Image (cartoon, rainbow, N blue to C red; front, side, top):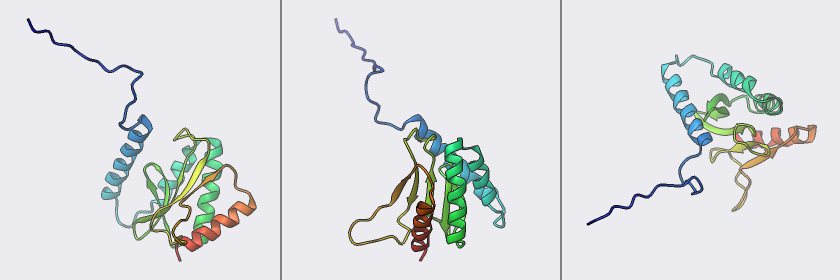
Length: 152
């Protein structure tokens, strides 16, 4: 007589798939793409970015609001848009820099990231993301300079 052994995954096993937060970010991205295709080409996506910033937790919101103002002042050619549910800034539709909320990703700090579209290349290694815990005048000046360089 043959017996079949049934195995079940235990909750202690590691899961190599996407986390709930990653799946939520992908769903937000799909929603953004769907919304963008329905909009007039004349629509201003900045209002979506500002609404998303307003939804952030207090500490993330303060940083994101200030970061938005810095980026708009130092790189007015960049277009604000949502990217995976977070504020991003694009040139010709391609994201150059973006903000990641600490709370959304359960991280210790918020992040300002730069894509490969940013002109920040320096030798064979350069930073592409920066941890943000507070925006002091010195940090704001560094961000402004980075953003200007990224779009140069």
